[in-house]
Length: 386
Image (tube, helix red, strand yellow):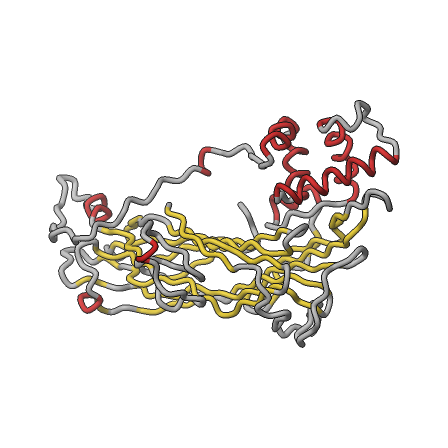
């Protein structure tokens, strides 16, 4: 898979956002003056689909140190998926938000204190505990690490704590299916047309797949992210991704006039938001749109292509000192046989949004989806990291 990136710099674009129109909308809809969270503040992180909250986390900003060594951490108060509270130790498997409870943090801090040579004992004095929390807060801020993720990873794999402290980067244990192939470059010159040839057993699926390609029309999501080394080749900024798309088409022909019976699809609208009650500070809203069921005039077999696929960004609001960035990954094409003897091209991808503030909260919204040449858009997951 080929990763194509975009970023939304933390600038004071807008200090508030328009929320969804739920009667129980905690973050609020009306513009509010945004204030930096302070000790005791409760922040809310949410994933939404068509205006409905899918996953929500409420966290309180707590000083786990003391007056001499203040160490602020967000302690989870509530974490729900589809309105159902989830267990803290299941958060990584059920939802995409990493949250940490006071109990989890208290269990972690003696391990951290020992690893950092703050103490040699598993039982910490109040002074040692405050020192350890202050050190942890400074370390994770300096290295831009998610405290909750660090706690969860070390809980499941204690051997990762020392390497993390040494290199300043969490390196989780990866499974084999986390490694993806690299998408080859699309040639500048289109290859000559090669007709499909039946094999002796009549199976032409492999030869069909060989003639289908994912063509990248320079997918550039917001703000000067390019796929070339030459600075002079950079396009003009495209803040709302209006001018770019990808295609799953016959690799020998990218002329849209040679495709017919095309249908359109549009996914639900997905949103990520973050803020305090009545003061939303980060908001982004997007959806996937495109064409499918498209046939090519010269094909000897009936193949259903996806000639146009696009991640559309509706709205972006980023308050001062807040963070919002993301990436889109598109998969290489596959082919499936349909029940009526046709061949459907299958593509898809993953949209990952990282958001929160610039120091403590790091939230992730991850949409995984499939596009089928016969059936169009299918959401694989939105509130799950599986």
